[in-house]
Length: 434
Image 1: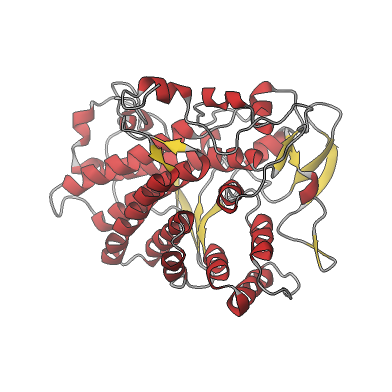
Image 2: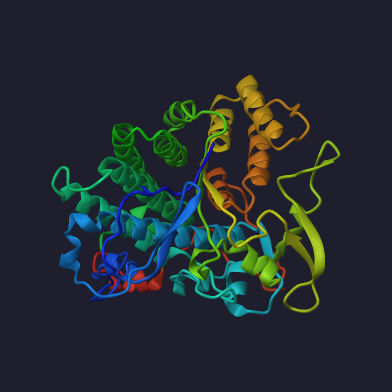
């Protein structure tokens, strides 16, 4: 059962609108809602795409209107889409799932994890040729839009918003993922001009958002949203060391459940970015330790690559990833596979063996014959979640050593592991000592 972003197809769209004023996120005072509504967005709706164009103009006060509830939701989820594309690619290069085969500086500072990464805010890409990474700004915008949208729709009079409970569940759950992913990748976080938050404090807020989503999902009768919130909460709890809480949530996820982030080639900012930087351009190649992997002599279907000419530098043999080859290919956000990995990690022993075998069977791989050790679980996670945005958080949580020495471009690796708070945030936020 695979679910993508879903909107109610029988709801009328409101008049086109856009913004007056300045966008904002993190410590800035502007309202990101107005900026996001200026961009044409689209969300996958079961078997079709709902295109939502929002030209025109409006002031912030005009969004205190129940007729705009669906537009508010579409904007929040659309911003999450593009920020997720930035997150997975940024996490992938930092966690050495791929390596640079280009001379472009904006790529290579990430490839070598240089200290100057605190100069980068990141943005949603609008060109397939974009060479930068970082996801602070777009994920903060998505986080804010979901929080702000929840506040606005909660305040609208009863009966004024169709499918209100489902909208509130979505805004809470996707807002939870905004906090979760900011915390997984960054050393510290600040939101809405507030003080610095530790990674654990950020995970705590994520847990609260996922918990808040559950009664709304139940009221809407939406099991997919409930499962999504449970998996998100389990992931947040695991990051905080609450293994039993994570296990309780993971046990409630049915086999086969997947909720995806939907992508589309209708706009570059809505695309899965992996093909742009590994196929359209040959900028990032598969790392040597992820090439030609096997399971008991059988090619591992989770990590596939081919040699395809040379990289963007014109000389490096290019090992091209084959997991995501289409700009419109969706990516998993929450799945039963993640739940099984949590069960394996927390319970260990025979329960871990059973969980790992379920996953192996899904990918048509030979049965797992180990003892369910944490070392084996970490390696199975590395292969299964390759390019999906888990490895960086795993490296930080498990204390896995980052590469040292020289990078693929011959630069000495810097000391960056988690992403530093952007300097612009530190300097502009009055509640952070510079």
